[in-house]
Length: 322
Ligand SMILES: [Zn+2]
Image (spheres, rainbow, N blue to C red):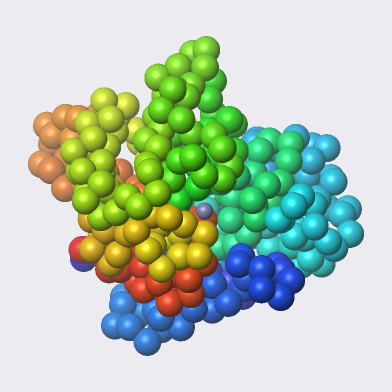
């Protein structure tokens, strides 16, 4: 059984959103309730997030933007992103959750982690909040991972929406690969197949836009027949996952129709990449190399049907434990 860290703290509930806003604290409550009543709760290594330091956030956001969020009065900061009195603090801990998971992997305490955090991150651009996202948790995690000695980072984003923020932050970087599957055309409008990165980052962004109505079979094909080769060629030292469960058929913000089976096959495909890339990157000369795999850290993004969200996270973690 793999050593799987579960990163969570009630601090994430202090990011409050108005009545009927889809990105609500009940999302995390649903996840915790589902996990607690399952047989896996006691198998997880429970870890508290840390508060990200300013320098960790400044690695991917401008100083001016961070100051603006810190000083902002409660209210909407764009058409759908809300800031409450507790948001700034919660957002620092959300990025800090991914950072803590990276440290624990580096120390060898865990091999994989699931970060049940909010606010989500992948729409957040370097200088602006967007799409319920304040700080880009996975992007901050990627830069922190490099500071801790993980040289090459592979980011996989299966949220139904394209992670415009993450793509833009790293599009000129050849040490951080961004791979995304998402409904297209759909919010936020980016993520066509022709967006492949810029400058020396050209070829290090890979988008697979999907029509509304796509489902399990499309994902099975992508995550088992396409993704593993791309990861193997890049040979990363760690994999970070923007885990958005708004791909579920039940989700109110999605036209993608993934079920329990689809979630399992996506996660299996991702985890298989962590074994394969390790083999190509570190030739198995030593006996110990046989069982070597690179760390995989999932960070929660979307997912707005509470029941489907709880079940999907449970299924994800069950696969991670095997
Ligand atoms: Zn989403």
